[in-house]
Length: 188
Ligand code: GLN
Image (tube, rainbow, N blue to C red):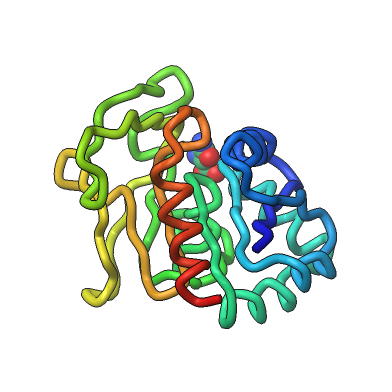
């Protein structure tokens, strides 16, 4: 099992590090053809408008759309915004998960914060790093909300796709990445 990490912009190297530290084979994905050799993909945080521009520029979208129908994708923060059905901004998101993203809902960079988040598959609080994080609105009641923060869904999944508004790659806690790997392994 190999996990790809989209490495066009953003904090892809921290995802690679936490996977390396936990002995999960991973590759940085910079060319759409690499999608053929991974079982799941992480779209990291960064700047969603920039990542989307680069996805278009490098002609990733058709291959990624195809990938999304068969394989697993986890988007953190900007990655989650890109995977949303829509966002509160002029941008054509990919509609892999039926949520609407309200960008920078928790404030700008200077308002970044860390707080405990209760995740429904972990028995202790998870340190959530919120950095210009989006607020998600659920557009389909069938989605699984795996964590709420102050009544807002912050970790959500559908069959193949997982999104979080916060950044688990900034912690040493492997629980959420491990959950994503479990989603992939269940299918393989
Ligand atoms: N606010 C950023 C955006 O809209 C996301 C920030 C992040 O990924 N930490 O793209």
